[in-house]
Length: 491
Picture 1 (cartoon, rainbow, N blue to C red):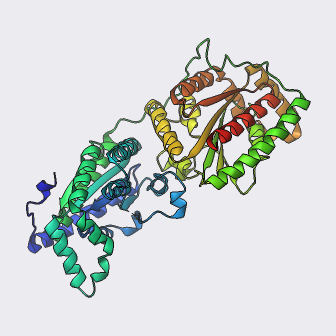
Picture 2 (picture 1 turned 45 degrees about the horizontal axis):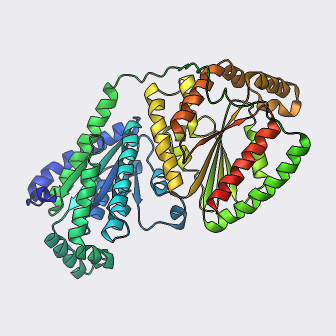
Picture 3 (picture 1 turned 180 degrees about the vertical axis):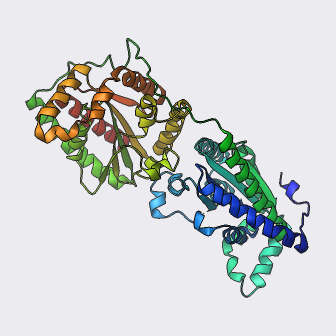
């Protein structure tokens, strides 16, 4: 593969001077068009040490409008980054629509380097690369153009360039001990990088191998590729048919997981108080152990309006130290959230080690309210099942205990609670016109919830349906499940 970019391509200074002004003009034009479009762009700059990655990034900033560019340099992980799933550090800095992000290093860096220095094996590398392909496919589906550049130098050229930099009094600082470590591992780095590129070279996010020996040639090839790709992506968006967003009203099956819940289960006040005291104490103790072990937890609460999600959450919180948890209440997305891929708003809130995040509604809104109300296209909510599964698998792999609760009442119980909220002054803030509108679509929401449970539940990440007609029973059921999950993990 790399032999194809060791052929001695060069561009004369005269030719470079002729091309430069036109290229700079074109880049500024296409960047101006990007700024008012629903597209965002990520430029990944990777490759051999000494190949001029830093020089290239600086040049892009000088040729384009730096005010519309975000440069992200991924050095060693910070404590904050190490305490979250690997992809968190990249998700949090994805560029919004209309902007270009230059990633100096990327999600490829750690998997490749870990394999080069034997901190992982081939199977680990392949799993990481397959996860990257999933991620880049999702970005493409969310109107993110990913441009991946690999700047290549032959081993002789790399050594020659590093020695030249070392001898230059004003440039020697650019060469570090780690650069020479990579020189010693050149053949292995070459082989593993080639494996990574082959496995992740896709139609929606192809690699561009750049012969980096000649600065003028490297510069023009990279900038031309960026210009052409952005022009093509913007043109494709203009010509794409208008996205069809329509409400989807599925019908529930006569026999389904929610209809089969035993809503006759109840607890007396005495039973409830005794069990509340028991599980509050147990969860408090286990949550402290969770912090000591450096693990974290994410609790997801979904269900119909007035199903008791808030009450169940408050009972769990009563067992926890307020310094250890955070509650994220999910409502309609903000303009900032809508300018990013759908899951961005949830990745931002993932807990650090030792912490607990509770989501009052969650990422499942895409396959529930957005599906039923027509807030997204059918293509969006249909592919969301796979994206959500991949997201939750990454949480679990990183050590986050994920519990997903669906609290379910009957329609008759819901109407009673609505009426109670209307007539009780301190509960009136809980009832809105939207709640009544959603009630009219009870069957559609139930069908969507059943499909969601079927397509996103697994042995490792199951849904926990809770019969919630009796508030006491539902609250204790939630606390039991939290305690059991903590006990199982902390054995």
